Amino acid sequence: MGELNRKLLIVEDDPGLLSQLKWCFEDYEVFTAEDRESAIAELRRHEPMVVLQDLGLPPTPDGVEEGLETLEQTVRLAPATKVIVVTGRGDQENALRAIALGAYDFYQKPVDTDTLRLIVERAFNISELELENRRLQSRVNESPLHGIVAASEGMLAVCRMIEKVAPTDVTALLLGESGTGKELLARALHRLSPRADKNFVAINCAAIPENLLESELFGHEKGAFTGAHKQTLGKVEHADGGTLFLDEIGDMPMALQAKMLRFLQERVIERVGGREEISVDVRVVCATNRNPEELIKEGAFREDLYYRVSEITVNIPPFRDREEGRLILARHLLQDYSKAQSRAINGFSDDAVQAIESYSWPGNVRELENKIKGAVIMADGKLVTAADLGIAGEDVQEESLNLRSVRQRAESKAIRVALTRSYGNISKAAELLGITRPTLYDLLNKYNMSAEGYGKKATGS
Image (cartoon, rainbow, N blue to C red; front, side, top):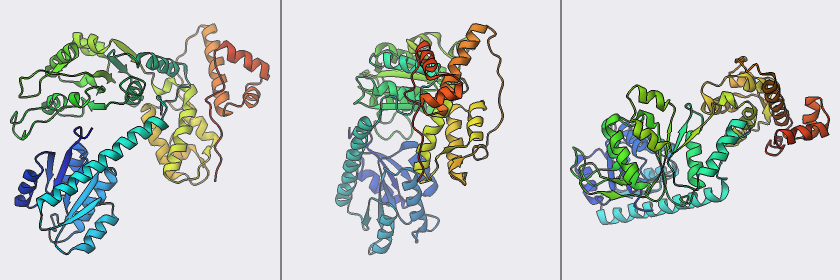
């Protein structure tokens, strides 16, 4: 595991010392920055495991305030990253300030490369142990479909398909609007598969510039292009033995699609600038929020690649079509965010429940998450209101006019809504529906439904 992320970010404005440090750590994948802005940019892009940062940074290299601000921002953005600060001789007071702000360790100049190498190597070792511990702990604590609420017929069907497909090695294509939970389902496929103890590696094909995407996927050899100072493994090789998730594959450049097709057919890659064929054992999961068939008609996506990536296609319903599951997911998110913000919030007010059920949710689950995060912060009382959520109104959509299907759909929906509002209490749900308990049990059997999974009512503190 230690070879998978040996990324070191060096933040130093002295060109001479920076050159010395790059030479000292040539065994690592080194990235450099000279000031706070470039340091944060490199941190976001490369997610280094360890940062070696000078406290004296421009525009005030003789002071430490800019360096301390950089440290604070780094720790806030990447709390698992180990930051080693480099201070001037005898500057123990500022070194201790840095430790108090979240730095892992400090080192005082002048630089002795052997000692500094030991400190950096120790930081990598501890970080890797912590990463492994978090990975093992997550396997113990999380269910395979963690974070996925399947209370609607559409999502129940999706989850059943995920459970069937996961143990195989077929290439799966997840289709759904932005914010519907495609990456969550891809991670569930990985956790339910025999590859669960290996890496899950994700790459967003739309977020990386076209001229860099091939290198990010397949890696590059030393000297392959300007700035390629050493051999670098790509995402595909990092995923060897595990799962590669290609998000927004519909936005992959046409020139790269041919190379991706060859990789999927033969499971071999060539690094940029290299000639050696490298075999990889990778399970591939793809996703897109676009219509592949329309892209093919437009000449923007290869038809042969589409058939290769869609051995199994999973269509994820938009959140507006998951009426029965909206309130359950909203309550789940409210509980999580209330705990994270240390807020004693018990649930939703009646008008908030009505708003959640009637709003069309054009931004899908991601919009729901954002609304609830904001509501947890804005709420003045024990209940989140519609005003806290910032939503109101009801959308009317055209329905099927077949009376039998209308009745079945309405009956099924009413039962789920009643169970949701009553937190799975059969007596209360029957009362809301205006029927007896035996009648409700008969209807549950008719629609193959259960009162389990509708949660318990939260209690305040």
